[in-house]
Length: 318
Image 1 (cartoon, rainbow, N blue to C red):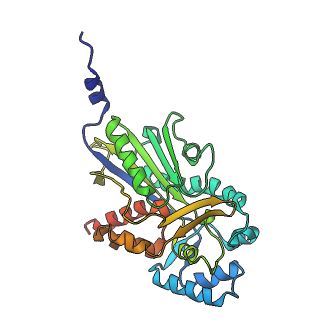
Image 2: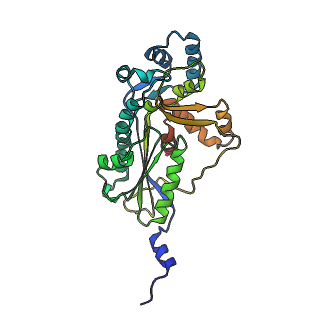
Image 3: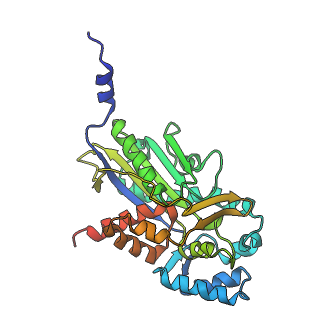
């Protein structure tokens, strides 16, 4: 009997068709804050009501954000128990880490559970797990914790991505596409989970970019199940995954950056960020991203999943 060639072996290992999105799930913390009320709440809880001019600027930011409400894990009670988190530059990393290393996987579990239920197959069929978050760093990582919380097989192939920022939603889907198309029968669970406890801080009149972030970002998680060659009898693909890519925009050096310090994750945004992005994105996606922001704010890496779900919901026939 002739031995199989390397190419024949590789062909047998690969899927035949393109990756497809088999299910989507999302989750947000129960604590909801309304954008119209947030400036008063934010300046009160951070003991900053005396900064009247800055508060007025923050109100204008919130008014122009197009956001109506956001979901946040941090409640007034939690912030009162951790007053250093309410200062702009106070040592608070331990307190922040203690929150996010527990709550990020838990929020991810909520989204993943919904996706698995929609998929309709047992968890044991999940072959790969890709987890990403900008909220905290730990070892074993959030991927390990989620594996335990969901009861996935111990042999599930895990990939953990920390500190990627907002674009990570596209990065993990690109990775999941490659995994699904190059591993026959692979079913990849992708989870993005974000909690702003790592970035919340009080106002500073010399760092208005921090205030912009406080007006925009929110907590949320998204989960997607990706697989190629779906079973026509038991799986209902929502999309075919044609491509996923990323690029570095011209003149964007230093436009957005974050640094993990004793004070938490300190991020900086240049004022021309909206212009840079708007010149390099298809207009069709802006409609759904605006609708997402209105109801949930911007949950960093989880945004792409929530936008995709919203697009799917809007495009369904009546």
